[in-house]
Length: 428
Image (tube, one colour):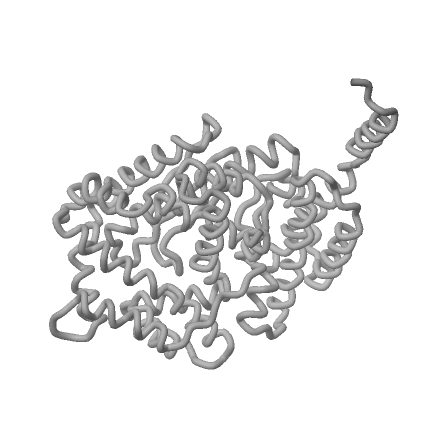
């Protein structure tokens, strides 16, 4: 059938529109963004979590250290420039534009916090992480605690009984490395069944002390990570899979590797040579790393796998695995108590000692772990929302788009890890 002349005219116009996008302004803005993040890192030791871009950029920033006022003014101007750019038709380019603008907004907020501006916990988390955690009162946690109380009969307070129960599931220090290597291999093999990784990707594990966190992934670039495990406090058997998945596969190591491969190497997006810790990217990073545990070991599979592969290596009784994970599942529901403690502490409603008491009472942390968590709050502030709220938002996003189809969940999850999506995008 002969097509009308108007059809060809519209086709030519549409092809012309598709080729008018000029990437140079955005690429220039991305370079300026990287340099601003590096400059902020000179004032805020925790700000730059990873950098593997041109070394001369970092050297130039160190040699000519901009002030916080200069960084803020530069970020404001750059954000206005990006917002004024035409909206690209390509969905990924549109995500890139929104990502850079929102990351800069977070940088401005972090400058304000470092300079002493008072923000409430919720104001800070919204400004920096693009999300606000729900509020839960004491009654909410007391109801969950009653369920745990029924599971752990006996003498003593609930926290004493819980600690005594958990102490039977500590990985002996002499067996820690063996158990972790087995956990890493389990997480890696399950991940590689569903996600294609560059052939030369790898990471190394170090055991450290005197840290406010339990584990950390220091991404090195070139598809390599350094993962550190803090051994200040006893490490329970479930933490092997938690840390192996969260820090490694399919968590931080996979996330950073896919960003480097798909956005930096394949697209040339230089902004992904730097990772500012206090930014919306962290909610995606921490949320996907925590949800990654569930996607790799869904439902009862985790307890069964650990019982079969890890308990014997740690010298623990596999017959008690099911009870242990029943207790752990109930305890996990108390995670938002940590957010409440941080909110009240950082808003000045309670002091450090009272925050530790809140964590002991409502999060059922031992005194030592509660004190360590307060140190984390001192150092990272509202960052705490990224673990539990981030996980919930990522889970809802993946399951809304994939339903109960396991393979589709992996596909949606991998796509999320390979794109510059923001926390506010997860509701879409």
